[in-house]
Amino acid sequence: SYPSAESMAAEVASGRDPATERKGAETEVDEDEYSLPADAGVGDYVMHPWRSMESFMKRLIGNFGWRIAVMMGVNYLLIKGLMMSVLGLIRLSYCKKTLGINGTQCQTMQAIAQTPWAIKGAFGVVSDAYPLFGYHKASYIIVSACMGTVAFFALATADNISVTVAATLLFAANFQIAVADLLCEGRYAALMQEKPHTGSTMVSYVWGCFQIGSLVAAMFVGPVADHYNPQVLFWFMIPMAASLMIPTGLGYLGDKRVAPEKEGWDWELMKQYPYIVGFCIIMACVALGNALVDTFFFEEHLWQMTYALSGALLLSVLAFLWLPRRLAMCNGYMFLTSILYVNIGGAQDFWFTAEQSCVPGGPSFDYTYYNTYTAVVGAFTGWIGIIIFQSQMSGWTFRKLFWVTTLMQVLASAFDLLIINRYNVAWGIPDKWFYMFGDAIIGPAVMMFAFMPAIVLTSKLVPKGLESTTYALLAGFQNFGGVVSSQVGIWATGAAGIETEEPCNFDNLAWLVGICHCILPLFAIPLTFVLIPDLLMSDKIIDDEHLNEEPTLAGEAVALVKDEGEGKDAKAKDQ
Image (cartoon, rainbow, N blue to C red; front, side):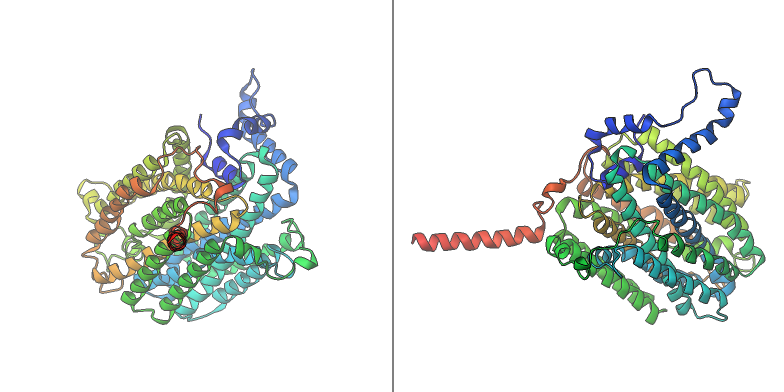
């Protein structure tokens, strides 16, 4: 009975007001949708999924063309869906079996590798302002695909590779995924703006491809990691990384070459939105600086955390000085929530998969269970979370959604505390059953509850005419919050005395989880009532046409100084 979050995000990104245009748009889309006949029989119900999918694909191709469908399918099924999921699932086994490094080293490597997702804003500015070889998108995608292909080849063939070299190569692989995601996102948002009656058709297609790719990756990564060196998986990533060059090179993206007189830097973008562009560039410099600090001071976790927190403080201040107030407040909240849920995955993952010699009486999960079974179950419960959100929660205000989902995340983390303290064993519940019906089922559903309002709010903060750059800025800022969270978690793991290699020491792991996942996130709840608007998801948040007129602290300060100067001049004139 409520509109989907993806639909609203798509509509806002395309520059339309869902409150005023939804009814007419739904009428046009629904006319082509397949529905069961009034006298449906058993055969109709059996064929309903196939006929619905056939109707959906006809509608997609009829509106956007088969070339763009192929382009988005390759990118979101193979690149962001399958390839990115493999990188995430392989991390633990690659650290333990191939590199032979401990939990904090593994998490530091991951922080470096994830940096490209924090510099999307600056890359959005570059791609919008400078057409590489005459193209704003296609050339950048092909260059990044070359980087990813070379990186995967090096990861597959290198023996006795150092952790810093592995982190650099994984950085290049993530760079390809982040660039392709950003530019394809900008392309289909522009197409949706041209065809507003299509509603969420393209977003649903993209999201479906991503989910299928993630599910396929989960099904084979665990068994391969258990029986072989996980490094072998990088061989399969080489053709996938290279595959994106084919539809892009054939022009399936539909990125037209700019006119010769428009080649070179477009300075108008920077003149029109100097604060947003400047913020994107500074954020990229801070994020890249964090990666360099991690690389050259790999074991200096206190210095790493100090730099990350200093960068977070600088960006937070600049956000409130330079960005429109509503944009800064909402973005600041999501940035802080990313930091407050401190990432201690290096300690937790190693504890759950540690041998009995390391954690006597511990779960000792194999990779097939930890990476495959739980991920497959989590994929289905994540979809259930979407259904519950749409039917029960999508009529709530943003403020209520954020504080309730924060509380639910804290309660879900309690399952980790129970299993670490071995309460489930005392209750006679095996580890695999308790974890499966705890983290594997509840965790993904709660994550969806938090993800859905965040993506809708982010999309609603994107001003018309600057969609790609602003969306990349907001997403990149939140991703950098995840990097800062990881840096704090690395230091906290060391401060707690956690040792993931024999002789192992996980004595303080329960305290670490309790503080990082149950206490600190609660501080985000009072911030919800200060920074998040008490508006429905169907309400308009910013006025695109008056974006430049919306007050910023820097703008108000300049205006105040100007007014005072004019007042003094007028007074002197009167005297």
